Amino acid sequence: MNDQPLPDIAAQATHHDLPLDWVGMAGIALPIRLASAAVAASVDIGVSLDDAGARGIHMSRLYLAAQRLVHQELDVPAMLQVLDDCLSTHQALSDSATLTLRGEVPLERGALVSPLSGWKAYPFELRARQDGRGVNMELQVEVGYSSTCPCSAALARQLIQQRFAETFAREPLDYLEVLDWLGSTQGIVATPHSQRSTATLQLRLAPDCTELPVLALIDSAEQALGTPVQTAVKRADEQAFALANGQNLMFCEDAARRLHRALRQLPQASAFRLKVVHAESLHAHDAVAESHWNWS
Image 1: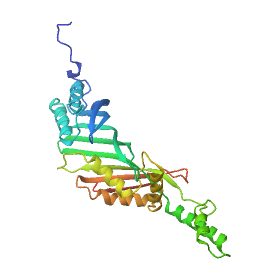
Image 2 (image 1 turned 90 degrees about the vertical axis):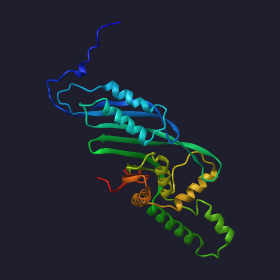
Image 3 (image 1 turned 180 degrees about the vertical axis):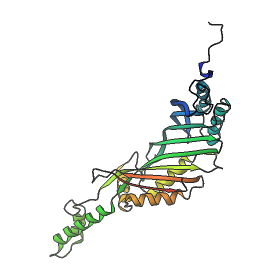
């Protein structure tokens, strides 16, 4: 082994004399826990390089700071400690530090009717920044749901009415005959179009928030929407889902307004913005709506 001190090239002065907004590492693989679930997260971590004469930062110190989170339940104090470590190990070099974690949190969700349950993966992103103005922390999750077009449903009902009038206009109605007709493709000649849809919800956490409200945010959104996509289903569950869709018609504008009202009830949020995307099964394009509250 070399007994001589190892050269520290990053500590040398630079000839370019220019500060940098952000220097760090992106895509660090990190096993963490979120909402009591094991998550394989991808981490970006970095600091500003405010000392214009310094050639570089201490990357290894950032990597070691991120290791604090390994296999630990992620919460606000844990993320703040990592940011503090980034700045304390870069005194006189950096005035701000950022930490971003992204991945998918697996949550077990029960079926609508049957005793079955299954797992859904919810994409998330956590962003934290500490600088001279304080700390800013944001949580973003994606929630999948089914949306059924109100216009398409009305058009389908009209076609069914027309077929009923054509079939039974000139004869007395027989209860059993009508019942059979309603259960046939001759009677229900049209159905509305539905599509898998996605809501992207971004919260700015309140200053007194210590826990990450992942479950609260997802549960609130799914309850507001009424038709979250399912996991394991039996026929009874599929029928219940069809009923939920039929009684829960929504344009993208409806979905955005429902979510806006739901997120306003979350005490952990000091601000939010949201975006819903309905991947239209009728059109070759998406229907999109956005909303925000107190976001700047």
